[in-house]
Length: 211
Length: 211
Image 1 (cartoon, one colour):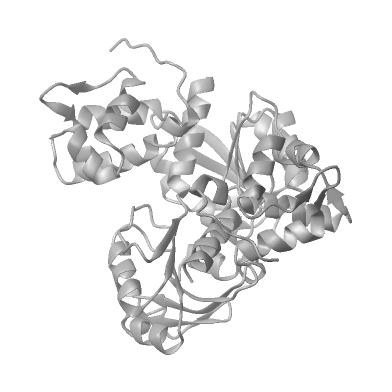
Image 2: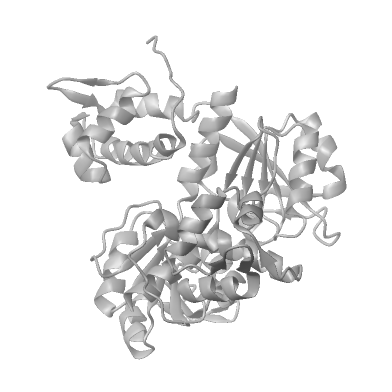
């Protein structure tokens, strides 16, 4: 299928994982095809928004038939890069690092975690959840030698920018950041942050507003 | 300070934790006052957007002076409800539940975790990170007896809607959800979800796009 992929807005991109999630559920339920109206009922997006979103990537629907669930699922997975494998390392061999390292979504999304790094000498050399913990001093060499593309930061605020800088210097192409900091990275490095605390404060806001 | 709080859009609300974060940093660095231009340099929001955002809550700046960092920090904390305490329970005594239960941001944000719940009989009765693990069967009673307002879901996809339903039936006012599901809750219950997998797929998309 030859199609032109236009530059798509970040808002649309961030809806794709949700489409992917619902399409996976539909496949699990052996649903063959689905209309934009039905997808709207599931996702909460309007049918017209759904058609527009999917049009951005060439459009996979047929008038009067709807979308072939399997084909749409495969296409969105391809767009999301799930069929590609990215080699990753985790910095921070603490609890959060351990959750992330054993996170089942990784393999399903094409990420392979090779090692953990920590500055604490007591953790270095240990094997946690099947992953060896190395010293931060050895990180740059490891990344270069193993062609690691993704770095995951699970350390607290302090020190996180230094780790991002080290990642970038060693050739990392994307960072998944859990530190509550807006990291600064060059434009050609992808930065994706999970903001637990911002999410918690948003919950707090709405709870307080409703009181 | 008497001020009218207008109904504010979710997009603005979700910027407040970021303001709060930067203002905390400024306080740590003993900065007394800051202009919207300087805040713009820090946050990446435009100065005019910042003035508009803060205007929503009554506006705390003074022409030619800027914002008093301490006063603005205090006001935003109050708007976010950080000065209020919410009693919470965690469902799922696994790794993620353990990370969440020991998460330092909780106390700082005014959340107090009282207990964990799990369906696994081998975990029930144990004390994990200082929190007792109870059976899911006892959850409704516990919530009512202890006036718990917030429920945190750290279990996998399957079963998460049932837990949300049980939370709501027991009187929970807000849910912090980590399961990769769009939970359905009544309108008067606040639902805030952290979507680890959606974030990971977004990272995958941008990595793939740049290739």
